[in-house]
Image (cartoon, rainbow, N blue to C red; front, side, top):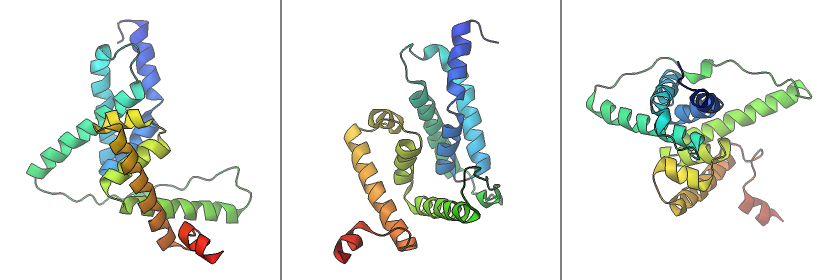
Length: 189
């Protein structure tokens, strides 16, 4: 399938990003089935275009850009098509047990925190969800995020600052005892 060993190596180096791409696709699509389709289409297009990637190219940023462009194209097509509703929800996903958890209580608290953060992130506007995921979960640099989102680095920085602030506010309002707001903590002292 691969004409040379370099192409095979390039493809294998892209596979390590599949979990990150899937997480990003979930943020965009908010639906497991659509997210899986987005990732699959991303890899299909990447394999076809592998020869166009520069030797010094950032494959992770390149893959995220492909995925986002596919998503934007699908959004354009959906605006023209009738709306459908997916009955499958992400709540059916199985709970992963952390083998390093000290106690059932620790596991419960960790799952509760994950749920609250997930809920708060879902309440953010799409632009904020995107930048939070790309920076905090995927660890992309500001420059890589700017490339993926096709905007200046300064815009990425300001979007990220606003997204973090909004996320903090949302977490404070969800459970103030678990997530004390910084301004409330200063006022209490």
